[in-house]
Amino acid sequence: MQKSERNFAPPVIFAFDTPVPVPANATSLPVPVDPRAELPLAGTETSQVDLGWARRGSAGGYKTPSLVGIYWSAPYLHDGGVAAGRDLRSQLGLSGTLQNGIAPDAANSLRAMIDRDLRARVIAANAASPALQRTNVRGSGHEYWIDRQAGFNAREQEAVIGFLLSYVPPR
Image 1 (spheres, rainbow, N blue to C red):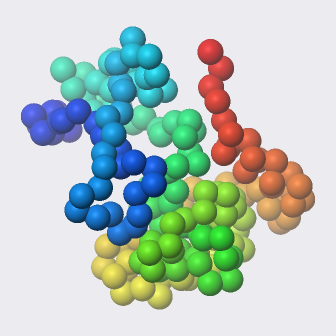
Image 2: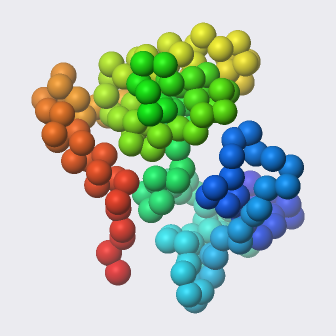
Image 3: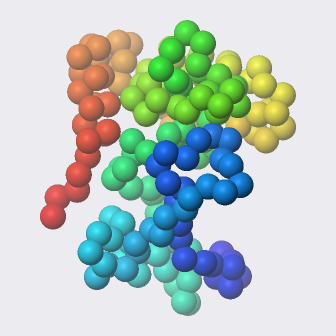
């Protein structure tokens, strides 16, 4: 990662109302990473950024993504393969959401992360797309279930999803 440092640029994010696919003239917003900034992005202390990207002589390390703002970061998982739209019958996987211009629903995408039956349907939907197969997008892995088979009821599952979508770190 050390050689990648010369390619770094100030971070930006597309405006939250940007449609998918992203148009050429999409508005981008700066992401504050200075811990002294008025609204810094959580966990962006300089030493942590240096560690995560092996910058400035750091040995580098693995930094897990923050839960802050998880509402805005669907689809989920390392390959971005866990996505579900509002309609859980037809909008599953990237083939049923982003490939059709449908934004993933954060709550349903999280539900697909923790419910093994729904995740199996997402994986099957992704597997049916030749484009996703070429890019190795599956939506599998990190199997930590919060579903009936693991002893949780629907109310408990909804509570976890609600917590994750509204998480604010302690100050």
